[in-house]
Each structure stands twice: as C-alpha cells, then as structure tokens.
Length: 446
Image (cartoon, rainbow, N blue to C red; front, side):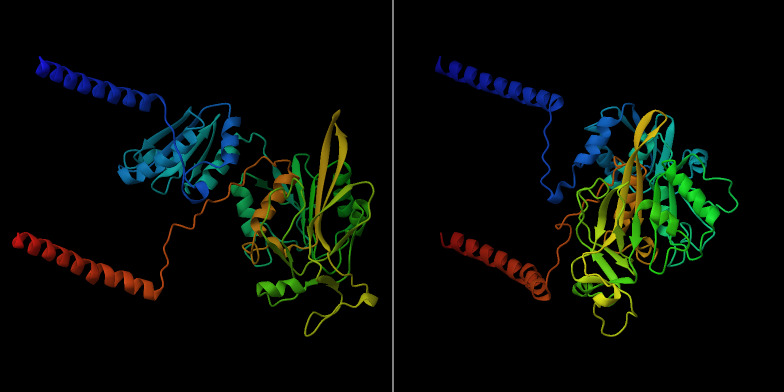
C-alpha cells in the first residue's frame, strides 16, 4: 500500500511539473518583460522616438533589401523590433536583391540591407540603420508640409551648394537629408520673393545690395516672412535699412575671446558659446559651439520680442584694431567688455488670413560657424539644424542623438596586457597541471 501511495505522489509531482511548465510557456507567449541594463540604454528607443511613433496615425512599412544572410537580417530585425514594440502595425519585409534586380535598379538600392520606408504614399530609402537615422527618416515621411529654404545669391554670399571652405555646402546637404528643399534666388532678376518661401537666407554678402533689392527683402519681412541673416565683421553691405527695421546694431570690430585659450585654440578671434537660454530654438542644447571672426550685436527695438541666443563669456570684447601680437581692450575706441551677443532671435505676432501666427527672424553676427571649414567643430552642425527647425516652425522634428556607450571597447596598458597574457599562457595552464598532479598523487596514496 505504501509503495502505491509513493508512486501516486511521484506521478502527481511530475504531472504538476508538466502543468507548471505549460503555464510558464503560455505566460511567455502572452506577456513579456524586458530590461535594458546597457550603458546609456542603447538597446531601447529614446523618449523622443517613442513620442514620434505615438503620433503616427497610419501603418508604416519597411522593406529591407538584404541577401539570404541570417546574421545581417537578424541585426536589422533586432533594430526594427524596438520600433514594433511601440507601433505594432509597423511591417518589416525582406527582399533578396539578387532575385529582384529590376526593382533594385528602379529604387536606386546600392547597399546590402538598405531600407525602403513607406508611409501614407510617401517613401524614402535609408542606408544607415541607426535609431538616429531611422527616426529622422520616419519623421520626414510624417511631415506633410514642404519647407522651401531660399538663399539670396548674386552678392558673393556663402553658397549652400559650394565646396569651398567659405561656403555652406556641407550644411546644405545636411538640410536636404533632413527633408528641406533649397532654391537659390537672385533677387536682381526675380520679380519677387516666392510666396511659398518658408525661410529667406542672407548668408554673409560681400557686395552691396541695391536699394531695390533691400526693398524686396524689407517687403518680405513686412509681410511676415521668416528670415535668417548671417553677417560678418566689416559692414552690412547695403542692408543697414533692414538692420534699422529690425532694431539691431552691429558693433564695430571683431570679437576676441580669451576663454578660447583653455580649449587650445590659438586664434584669439574665435569666440566660444558654452551655454544657451531656455528658448525653443536651443531647448536642451548643451554642446559647445565656436564662432570664428564674429561680430557683436546690440538690440534696441521695441517692436520685436528679442531673445539673445548666442552670448559669449565675460572675458571677451569687440576688438576694433588689428588682431595680432598682444591685444587688450580699449574702451576709448568703443570696445565693449563681454558678455556680447552673437545671435539674436526676433519674434512678433502677426495676423495672416484672419489667423495669428508668430514671425521668426534670426540674426547672427557670424557665418563661418556653419561653413565647410568649421561645421564639424563642437555642436555647430546640431545647433544650425535646431535654428533652421525653429525658424520654419518645425521644432517637433527630431534630432535623435546617436547612442554611445563607454563599454564597447577595452583599452589596457602595456603592463596589464603582459600580465593577462602571461597569466593565460603560463600561470593558468601550470595551475591546472599542478592541481591535476596533486589530485592524482592523493588518490594514489589512498
């Protein structure tokens, strides 16, 4: 009788064990939980990306043109799954480019694993598969309005398609990648500034504007147009009436900044800006930016709401003399001590078609910080993009930071490398041999 009870208990135990395993498997199919313990949570979507996905009101389809390579496809699938957790109707499909060469040629696919994103009839291809690139691409597809950026030409301005160090070609290419459209305008031959201009850009002219051209620009501003004006030391080249209308004044000379020496910058005419105000254009921006050969701006207007965005540190001034050798501030020459304003944002409320909207103008006393020569320094590129987004009323456009982590590589000193190598090659094998010998000797004695 006891043996029968023992067998029944054993049978019941195994039965309950099988039921428990089945319940665990059922729970794993219906519910899941994940924790990201990696540095910087680099395996989890950032909060801005999650908010962006929540605003999408239609399905998103992603096609990856990847060959039959399990490792490549698995890597792509893992990245897309982060988005699918917050947007279940996001579809991922794989296409072998070798089996569909005609489709690959039509879409211009050139890299293995390149993505095709489709949303509400709009599409875009993407080569770099990171959260930063993918979230920005999705945001561009969700943006229904096309923003036309119109740089004025014909007066030696910095070219947004130029390759010279002075030009802004690299910045222009980045703007295109972010979904902006560039259309240069020669206002000498143009009858008027187009009505669909989202932002008019004056980029450091070197030849004076004609009064009729200044009149066109002033008329555009008077009608509520948004303006980005990049200026440099040496005069406004006929745009003095525009400066008067905006209520601003450029101080004489070039800003010199003694604080730049701490960053090993030898040129004293390079100003640095490490902090920014709580303004929508610089909200949350914390990168240091540099401004070579900049002019200081003073605001005196009461018609605009003026906010200094870019301000130097106290140990700076506007040097009116030659910047060479030992220099110092001379108040008698009108050289003012810092902090000095390099960039000023001007806003006002205007009525447009029975609706009130905010007109936005940004005047910066430096064009070099966005030039090809200096765009990659500090946070110049990121700041430039933020300013353009604010001017075009697209603050919601994402600038997802690239997630990095300090634990991706291990850097060892030469001594540490020798110790570890010697330990694995000599100490560890000898220790194992010695342990085996001791065990063998003890067993033999027994």
